[in-house]
Length: 211
Image 1 (cartoon, one colour):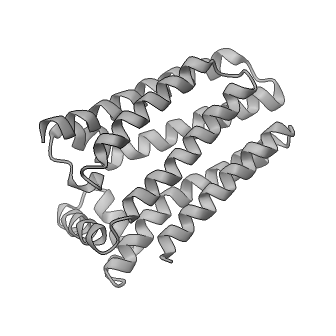
Image 2 (cartoon, rainbow, N blue to C red):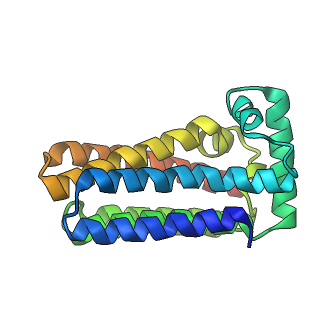
């Protein structure tokens, strides 16, 4: 098993543990710390796949320089991602599986405890089923060709924004449910996260339909 896949499995395990502990009203700050670790692993698994495919050529510092805007390194990273997709075609889908278990697990959790309304979960399910079904034809988001999809879905800023929004939203919902924090802030964060997620999903659909 690849190191990247192991990281994905650990990430999923942490999310399931967090979901269970939320129901027990466990210390919310420990829950948030565990959730942060899971999100870090989401970034780490992608890098581990690159590290393995490049045989160590893409070091952590080199990877960070690429993400910070070094076009030469970024080109090398993209080429390595395409190589990775050929060597382990299931790899990108494993990452999606981890993402979806994380999303569905948390959305269902907070729907179950009546923190967010059911229609929010329904929107996310429809968004993911549509985007994932169509994106399965491409295999990996590294091959995005349209400018809309490159900016809104596959770019480093977009991915970072999505993870930051997830962290802020679900962390606050933990505080809201376990510690009684005000609901209005949680509702606002959920609205922003869902809108951003739908726009990113629309960019995936646009990419496939115009390819």
